Image (cartoon, rainbow, N blue to C red; front, top):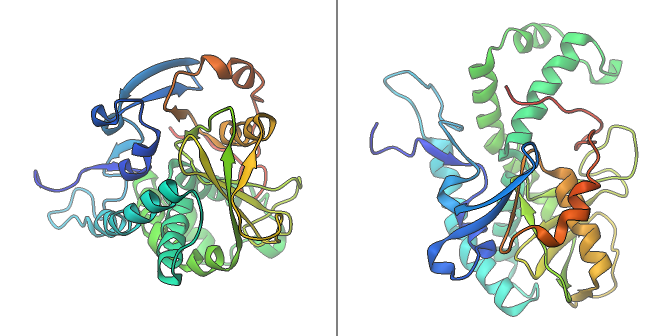
Length: 291
């Protein structure tokens, strides 16, 4: 057990390295805690990490780390693609690389603490009988879901990272992608780096019209993904400061607790002060704080 990966990052260090403060060799990053309203600088090994987040059969002699191992392989595969995109500042890549990046994005969509919160929120909606009739669970699935304790729910979440996440690969791969480049300003990221937004107040999903996805790749670049083409052509588009502020605002809105940057957050005080106290989460207005 001592040699097993029990400290499991829900935001990979391979991704966070692009946001490290100079010198990059120290692997330190500026972090802002939205709950405590304070900023600090720490090593990326210390952030977005939880013991046994994805471990299956925790407490048993045969605890399985298969999900953590699978996520590590995906991270290793996507690392050179990240580096190439950030160096070239464009999306010219072979189909296989796009598929690999899509697989990473699909698991990233599921693997964060927000994914766990969504499962817990769904259980509470079932318990409260607040779901629309067409979305409610039939028996015995309702009974099974309501009988889960916190560890059972965590394991359901861990399994869904792969079972549901990888099924979304084709969804991401089929959408329209563009690179946006920050001009005279910088991009931040968060512990929920794949920011999914839809202006509707109704329940929605990845395939809903007007759904937009933003994934910061570095302080300079962000990957914009949408169901409909928003920008003609495939060229990298420059993003003025107001546009960067909008992207950073969505990043702040989508965060559960932590923001990350390659510099301190003094220039973003106004943005942080404007953060609403009640957030609309992916798939409609539901949010349950982790206990």
